[in-house]
Image (cartoon, chains in turn red, purple):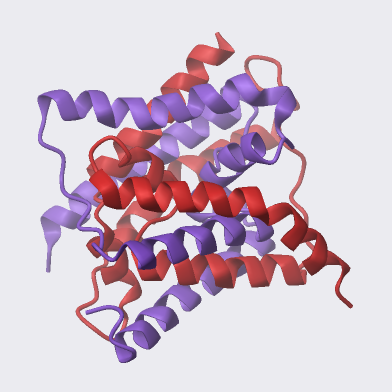
Length: 141
Length: 142
């Protein structure tokens, strides 16, 4: 049952990304282009996505376990550390240069041709080489 | 004003948020694309690999199936392969180092009012906006 729900959530996420227009890199770059012809679509996508999740977190706060028994994830970390900031800068740079972030890269892999597949392969390669970089960022004074 | 684009954005956003809400309330998991994929790749999510693979199968498969019956919108990605490789590497390393991406920090984190996620989202949007100005100045982006 849990596996079926997971498959369904992945599918709904993928369809939502396509319907919302977030697999169109020009819409994403258009949102980031504050000094050009600004495209507000991403604001509506993020707003639309945050509404059900905001309610879900309220419900989650009232219970210890999820419907299928897994524990509800603990309260988030609060430490604003260097890996968070550096990581967000690197991610944002790649996101702006390409208009792709991880979800849409996967969602568009079947129809996005060479562009999507190249980005996806490079992103996965980035995740392969990330662990030593993360260790170095955490160890640096 | 592109009202159609906004309406589809809102509808798709509600679908994304509903998927994340079900994943949280039914399975007790956080729906972050980079975390789900990254855990498979660096081995940190070995104990939950079936769930991670199935999520990605749904994420890739559902648009693929839809594409069989419906012409999906173009990604309009750059044809500059080198740029895509650099961008992909930055996103791969950055999301793992920063513990999240647009779905994990932007949707799941902001909605629980996580200070880390709100800060990360401001930083990656700011970095994205800055790089577009810089890349355009250098003639890398049109």
